[in-house]
Every structure is written in structure tokens, then in C-alpha cells.
Image 1: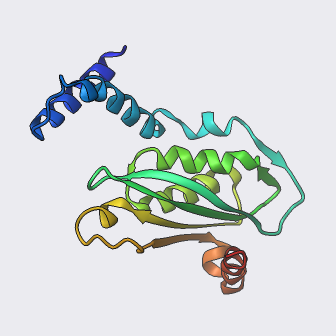
Image 2: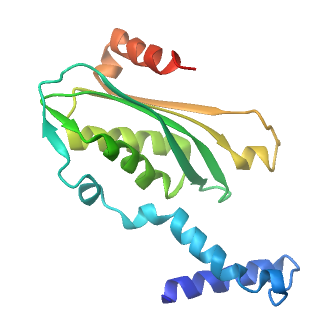
Length: 189
């Protein structure tokens, strides 16, 4: 076990004890370490690097029309309350002589989602990452998610959903391109 994991487990033990629970009772004895391992997994995006993740999976292609990857599920943690937000990410790009391997879109989403985040920044980070690795003429990202910090605490609104978008290049400058993307992702609902 790493020192970091032991330290995290110690902090979880203090939190659980601080709530008035007994971490020595049977059901909680291993909880601090389980929680530490879970948190380490849920935030493993900090240990990832975009270049290593893409691993040269950008390929020459004559494709120059819109490519859309829709409904990439995402799981992230709100940086304000450390509670989950869960949703879907839709990505489009206009290739410019090179295309990105399909699975890399999901990996990019996961890398940024597996950090303490706010949805607005996550949307921007994904769009900028796709743009930087593809050199695309345009990139669009839409995320729609439900936030446990709004559902489980505070205003407790169970059916609320947040939608964010980031449009770069042709998706920002061309209303027709933007409309085509938004139409494509809304048709299958």
C-alpha cells in the first residue's frame, strides 16, 4: 500500500469518526481503505496525460465532413461538494486531413471527468483537447448531466439536468455547422 492511500484512509477514518460513527464496528472496519481506493479510482484522471492517452492514434484521412460521437457516458465529481455528477457527452469535429481513433474520444472524456470538476470547465477541457490532438477545423462538445449536489442536498431537485456546450472553430463561426451538430445529437432522443 502506498503512503498516499494510507493517508487518504486515515482522513476517511477521521471523517467517519467525526460524524459520530465507530470505525471499529464490523461494517465500518474496512470502509476507510475502501473509500480511499474508490476516491483514488474516481480521480485517476490526475495521473493521465493527453499525449500518452492518445498514443499516436491520429490517422490520415480525406474525411472533411462532420464526425459525431454521441452519448459517451461520463462520471465525475463536483469540486464544490465532492459529490458525483453523471451524464452524457456528445463530441463533433471537422477533420482537416487527420481523424482520431474512435475509442480515444471516450478516453479523453474519462481523463478530464475523473478529476474534481465543474461541468462548465469539463466541457471546455474536452473540446480543447480534441482540437489540440486533431488540429480540426472545428470542435463541438455538449454535456448533459445530473448533479447529486443538487439532487441529494440543497434544493433537492430530482429531475434537474444541466447542459453545457463549447463550440470552437467552424462550430463557433458557422451557424449552419452548429445547427447541423445540434440537430444530429437531438434526433435520437
